[in-house]
Structures are given as structure tokens and as C-alpha cells.
Image (cartoon, rainbow, N blue to C red; front, side):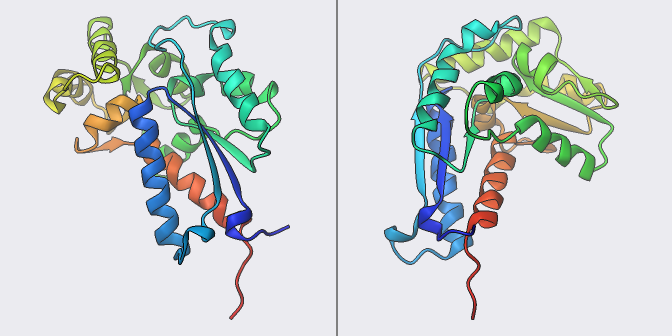
Length: 231
């Protein structure tokens, strides 16, 4: 049954890392204001941002038991009975199926969202600028050639992520060698496969920004839930 906008409940699992979660929340508010022509604070939907603490997810062999803080965070969101949940962290989305089976609320599927974008643009060869987990698990699509970074560059990306989460200044130019590697190996577009990388790499040309595409999906889901106004 359609709802008023302020009856919609949105669950957001963030904190991995906190800065990107804050940017997502800020952009979500701006998107809601623009799309739904907000007139007062009473018009906004109920948004629950659960920023959790968890070890940096930069390794490839992460076990289900090691993502318990994510599962616990989603279970906490379930208590608010959201219409859907969104996980901002790319690496955490690698465990979408496991998390969905063990929680009550639908979790938006970032992997599917990015695949839809790739197919719409008819891309055949993509690069991934992210952690080991996002390169080899989340964005490893069948029938699409995925260019992963060599081990030494992936470790470099991991170090950049850690620096950003510590609050250290990081320049976009620190991504140049990794971007050049992917472009030189034929990447038509490059997935910014970590929210920290999205923060500093948004002006790099020919990139796919998962956080922006997830935001658009959230706005579309809100639209599908909201009561249609009649003239």
C-alpha cells in the first residue's frame, strides 16, 4: 500500500568508513529535497543510519564469522522495521547473500545495481579500483572481462583506504598509477570499488561510482513506496 513520504523508513548500514557514510547521508537528503520538493522537515522519510565499528575489510579471505558486526548492525536496523536497507560499504556488499539470509529486511543488492549499469552501457571490459575483496568477489562478473590490479597496486590502494580512515590527507594523484594501469589494459570504465576511493576519485574520468548508483536506487525505491499525488 502506498505511503506518505514521511511514513517511509530507510535503513542505512554505514561506518565502513564513517566519512563516506556521512557523504552518502548528505547526498541522500539533497536528493530527497530535489526529487520530492520538500516543504518542511515534517516531509522527510525516517532515515536510520547505523554507523558500526569493524576491522578494515581489505583482505580477500574474510570469513562469515568476521562480519558479525555487520550482521548485528543490520539486525539492529530490523528493529525499526525499515522498508529496505542499504549497505554503503562495497566490501561488505560482497556478503549480500549471507546477510540477506540472516536478517529480516530486504538489502539492496549493490552488485546487481552495478551490473545493470554495465549492461546498459554495453561495457565489455571494466577495471576495478578497490580492495582484494571487491576486485575478486563483488565485481567479478561472468561474461564481462574484469581487470584487477596487480598485488602491489592493490596493497597501495589498501594503504590509501587506511590513511583516509585515519583522517590523513590523500591526493587524487595517489591513484594515478593504478588508474593508468587499468586504462592501459583496456578498461572502458573503472569501478571505484571502495567508498574511500570514491571520496577522492570522483573527478577521475570514465569511472563508475557505486555510492552514487546506490543513492539513485534508494531514491527510486522511495518513489515506488510513496503515495502518488493527484491533481
